[in-house]
Length: 466
View 1 (cartoon, rainbow, N blue to C red):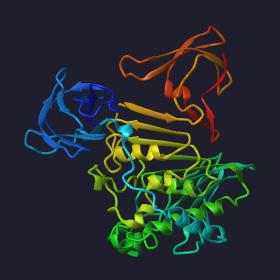
View 2 (tube, rainbow, N blue to C red):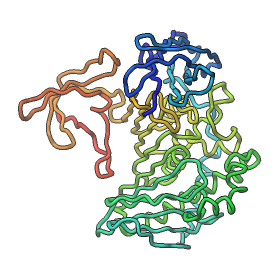
View 3 (tube, helix red, strand yellow):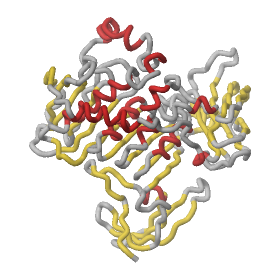
View 4 (tube, rainbow, N blue to C red):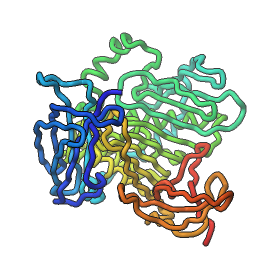
């Protein structure tokens, strides 16, 4: 394990008010033990436009203390990098990226949904509905004994075919369908598999899955890598020419084909993806109503117009008229299935302000888990997390006293709710109605949450009565 910095805020990181002082303490750690760091270069940037930086140090018992505030709803982004006495980056320390937020629940979408948004997508949905996909290529792959895996290419009405791997359990029966999407890249799909589900992973471009790195470069470098696909401002000026159009069309056609597989149970259909894959999965869920659950991580392409309103935008194409039809936030407004979001407060490829706006755009049952001090490619050694939940059946998240049944069958009595003195997190105190009647405490967001059980969503605890 590398040495690393830990960010400690004087209050829960998402609980500040605009204008309130935000105190951030930075400690250096090695395997969860405090150590010293003599040369730290720190930076603070804010969604209110602030920028400042400096040098500091810390040692056990004496953290580096940074102070800031926010003049409007949003986040401050804190980075810390260790240096040697000679002024060279000390790579024995991980880079710290963290955030704190003020009145983040007030963040809003910095655009409007285009007036012809639904008409545009209805045209694509109709195109898919009227098209009969055909298998252009199918090759069996020896991956595991319990599944059959195929490298496939499926015809589409426009452009390249849909290209990916499909894994189907060999044991006779009906199974849930899981469709996964990857982040921004130019490569074939991985051949993921499970013994209890149909798993499909389609690459973003409809390119061959089995090309070597040299073959990929020779065949697609000048089209997809240099210049970077999806960033062409001329293409993005129109929703008819943007690269994202055919990418999403391929996904919808692939989903249509997958639903014809006789092994699918016709009920459970999970769309999942990270980064660009989260954009793809969300768009699929918005326009294929058979998707029963959406699970996304570090979602990209959210609130594309935010930078024009002074917010830290992260890394993504420049806002353009054609991209308004593909903004993940716009897509979220058309999703009706439950959704789970995982993200990092230090991720400024996909800034937390854009994730909050995305979460707000989903109207049904939803959850958001933020982890402090992680970024787009880094998960911190010590986990400090923040949890938001919304259920239309219980919009306030109230846990009333009474009897509850756990999804595994046992019953419990809720005795009280309270706040954790350290984290200010709402907690639930409950007692088992079996055995010795042991008492337990659990965070309220966990008590209330829905979980995936056999690829179906079920409540962790269901209210039985008084």
